[in-house]
Image (tube, rainbow, N blue to C red):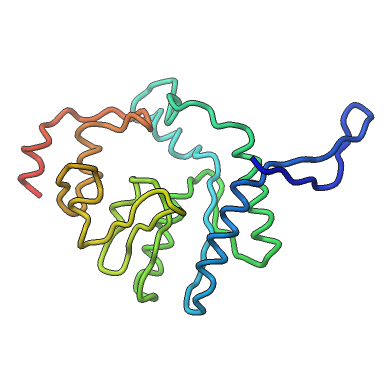
Length: 200
């Protein structure tokens, strides 16, 4: 990872270089530079906060102590550092950073899309998170993050959402409801997918 020195910090009475990894920040700034070349584009950076509301809802619903997303491997500490640094840099550049305490970025993106979808010709959500596929609509599409992820719109939804599988429009969440979501530690309801899909 590329590193940047931002002055010094005091530790145990001594000064040392205050280094922070910037590979992710550099990537983000490159993407913003590409998008901002079009004067008609409005860019809204969205950042995560710890999802305390979802964790509380998870505990109230399932009563399981390990909680929402607890089965995931801990993120490398440098990822959090880069996110904090990226947010600081974007604020310094004058961007209005979208975030809300206790909510994840996908919650904020949902609210922004619902609020603004009638005000813009098209909304492009740059994400690799399949939880946001349900927002795809006539003027909302999922876009790649650099060379990762995929382009999903209403026209390719059925074949693009899940590799080598037909996915009827806007049924990703129904499928997760049936089979659960192992990445979020959410159990499924155990219904037959093929029976439910026939009713859509």
